[in-house]
Structure formats: C-alpha cells, structure tokens
Image (cartoon, rainbow, N blue to C red; front, side, top):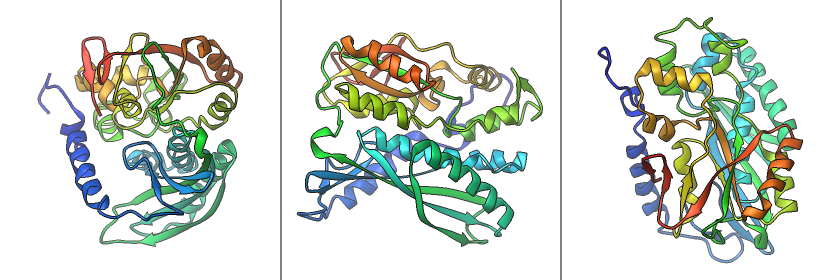
Length: 340
C-alpha cells in the first residue's frame, strides 16, 4: 500500500459486497425447498437468526465464528478468551429475534491438533456459557492439514421464543428511537483490516490506555443476553439488532418500510481512531466495517427509552439514544447512507 493510499476492508482481503452477493446466490438456491408443518421455517432468510415453527414456540438457530481474531490469539499465544467471542457472536444473534439462548455446539478445525490450545479455548467457551446462561451439549474437532491453516473456530447456537413474542421489526414506526448499547471494543468483526493496519505498523506492546495493543485486540465480544432478556420481559420492544459485520448497516435488517437516522453515536474508542489514522481509512468505511462503539441496538417507543437505558446500566452496560426511525430506507449517518 503506497503512502497516503486509502485502505479499505476489500483491499485488506474481505469484500462485503461480494459476500452479500454470495449470500443472495446461496439463498436463491436454498429457498427451492421448505419443510411444511411442524418444523416449517418462519420469516425466511435475512434476519439475525433462523426460526422454525414448533407449535406455540419457535426454535431459533444461529451459526457464526470468530474469524481472523483467532490469529491475534495465536500471536499472543493466549487462547483462553476467544471462546467468549464465539459464544457472544452466536447468542447475540439469537436475542436479536427475541429468543432466549439455550445451548451451543462448537467446531474447531486444526491444521495440527494442539490439546493445550483446545483446553484454553474451552476455558473461554465455559466463561461465555456462564455469562449467557447456556450449556454446551456437543461439538467437533477436525484435523485438516490440507485445508485449515492454523485454527478455525465456529459455533452453532439454539434458543427459543414464544411465537407471539418474536421481535421481527414489523411493528417499527416513524418516531421510534434507537437505543445503542456500548461495545467492549472491536468485538469479532473487521479483524482482517484491523490486523493489517495495526500489527503491520505498531508493536504488539504498544499501549492503548492501560492495555497493550494485543490485549485490546483480544478484548472479548460483549454478551448482551441478560440485559436484553430483561428489557424484553419488561418493555414492548419493536426491533433488535446485533451490530456485527457491516457495522451500523445491520439496522436495515429490521424494516423494509422505514429508515434510521443516527445522530448521536458515541465518541469512537482509541482503537477505532488508530485504525482510521494509520490505515487512512475513510469515516464511511469505518462505520461500514466496525461497530464504532455500539454493539447492539434496541428500537422502542420514545417513552420507553429511559427504562431501557436504566435496565442496561443496572447490568453494567452503558446505553444511550443514538437515533430514531424516519421515512425512507437505509441508515443515515452524517452525510452517509448505508444499506445491507
């Protein structure tokens, strides 16, 4: 990359637009058959969790991994937190449909099996399970020297929700507000870009506040299960969004009728500022790639905003009104319009 050249996620190796096209191709094929009756899919593809009909209840299913964040764990030779990320990325998707997480499976693929690394990963899985109040009920370890480079870590989660309590976003109306829940940092998205920019320009011991760079990069993804479930049990919620890959554009999954005006994002943490500065990354690209300080969003009527904030803060999560529902489509932030 030449001096002064603008860096993007695509130049780092991850093209979000091509990923979206690949997803659409896969969906167009898989929609060719759907089971009928008991176990029938609900709502189709596109939300944070898949749902299947179990009578008065729906079973919610998710699948996600930790991506190239595991390469940061390898650099640090510290694998005891990456399992927390795996739990978080899955259970946060489950609660985004209004479901309560129940259990998970894990899949670890090694180039060469390392039992000590596997044990360290399991420590994080256990910690994440406690935070999310779920059980691990199985998993798989594969040795694939001709396919896997180093390690890959993927999870599968299941939850349940009463069908009349599914939060799909269909009840969102103009004037509703978006409450943003603070993230713990980068979470587990954008690491291909973050690693390229930061670890190629700074020593891993570089200090960011009280943490080294490598410690900051390994900060576990925040698990929002307890506060969000309490909100769901206390307040009428219109929409829920896990701010993962695609950044703030994840809000567009909630409504095909309305848009979202975001006008009160928090000041970005130092880690985001470093990526933008060292990589000459545009502001729009930052908000399209990273969570930028907001890891989860709750859409409610304006009158309920303070109640949501109080519940979150009681669980140790800072929350604030970051925007509102408006006419139009997409997410509007400053002079940018984001779609998913």
